[in-house]
Amino acid sequence: MDKERKLIIAGNWKSNKTVAEGLSLVNDLKRELAAVKEVDIVVAPPFTALESVSKAIIDSNIRLGAQNLSADGYGAFTGEIPAGMLKEFSVGYVILGHSERRQFQKESDALVAKKAAAAHAANLVPIVCVGETLAEREAGITEQIVEGQLGGSLAGLSAEQVERTVLAYEPVWAIGTGKTATSAQAQEVHAFIRKVLTTLHGEVVAKRVRIQYGGSVKANNARELLGQPDIDGALVGGASLEVRSFADIIKNSI
Ligand code: PGA
Image 1 (cartoon, rainbow, N blue to C red):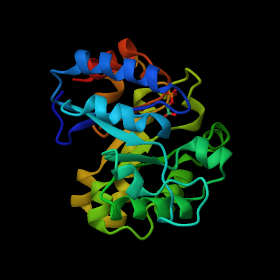
Image 2: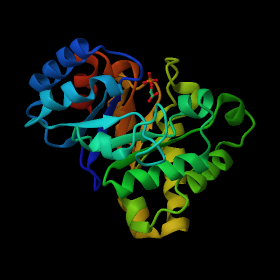
Image 3: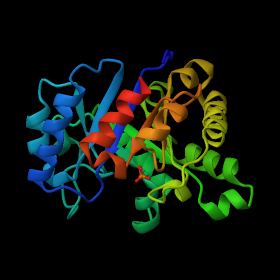
Image 4: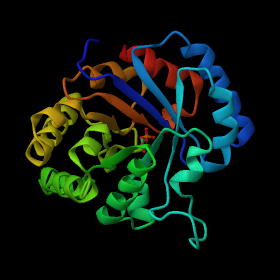
């Protein structure tokens, strides 16, 4: 697949995998994916497995992501992990504003923007997630919702920072449900996101930003989805927990 933007496929393990299970998975992935150069490959384990996974993937083509970070720095913020601590484990990416955090932790666009700024300040690449619920899609307000989330979650970032940010379009109704957006539905929103980015930061930046699709991506739909002109990768939940399915998603997208 020939694209002007390099594909980026990330596995979001969510609250899964003990240290031993995570190590077993990345060791298998390393073997399966050693020859892949066309795709940036990222795994995002829970915080507790970051250190061991980090050591296991040194000298491999797999990069490390975290699933959250603190909007604040070091100090009296019980239970929070600042970017500087993630850097100790060579974390390169951080997933921000995932719909599960927006829903269960009540994360707002403003908080996501603060976290994205903290990520950039530490030289971490944020993967900022946006996406509408089923009710919003059915009400015909998908674009309005996505535009609002984008504006709010990227607020305050410079054009250079936005260019380095990875976006993930994840329709909430497609996450963990087995219901994937059709490639046409996904492409339509991805193209819209690029249009919003053009308005916010100009065409050059908009053309360079990588936009992942997420929501029930599997080995059998990856090629079709990632073949769309504005889809530059995938954020994978359930199918990233097993070597076969995650490796096949990556191989099928090349
Ligand atoms: P899923 O999750 O692949 O299990 O639908 C995607 C995500 O939440 O990032």
